[in-house]
Length: 286
Ligand SMILES: *Cc1c(COP(=O)(O)O)cnc(C)c1O
Image (cartoon, rainbow, N blue to C red; front, side, top):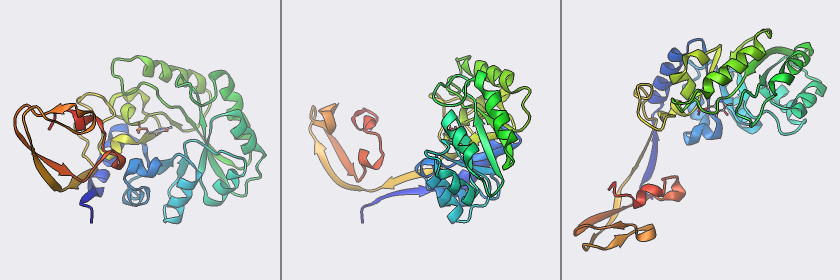
């Protein structure tokens, strides 16, 4: 068998979750989209079921997978639906869609809901990828609130630069959010990992922890905020080949690494198709 193993430490995942939840206060959702950032969505969610107030995935099928594996907590679909038909599946599996544009809103309001539904309404405060503009937000909010099936509207936004500690953009997005939603009642959700760690003024009713949950700092440099995270994935392998390079010989892609002296080198069973970055293979790190 190929000796390359990714080991997932679910205790570290739980410790990271508790640390992030405590730092944020109030409710914390675990973002387990993209198969929990490659760590296994079902197992990670099951490990967090006691602690998490809810889970966040990107799209419908990810949410259904969690439901089919016994996750009963609230699940939000961060991208919302891709077609009107998907609302029937949200209804059936009790999944909370994000509504982030007019088409999703229109389809939501025209679907005949059988069960009560929680909907997350996204405000574009500056990321400029998705969400209603501040001028259109209240109209969308009231349209949802008027719908009898709607149990709750969670107000949400997403940050563009929360991982850049020198940027004032988060403060600006925060202000736009508050100004736009001040007269609209209900829970609010803003903070991703970087904001949970470094921007206390963004902490509202529900935090959404992704990358930091897996022990990976969202910041480019080590800082006081990232030190408490524990790595969840460990990659181990064995040296299965070795040889000696003569002084001046190059090895590997691009022949960038050059032996400064005679060196014994080992070959491990792991490449960039496995997700290991190609960049350090040519670095003088090793
Ligand atoms: C992915 C995602 C998150 C989590 O972001 P991290 O930076 O990984 O913590 C939160 N909110 C939304 C809308 C997302 O798409």
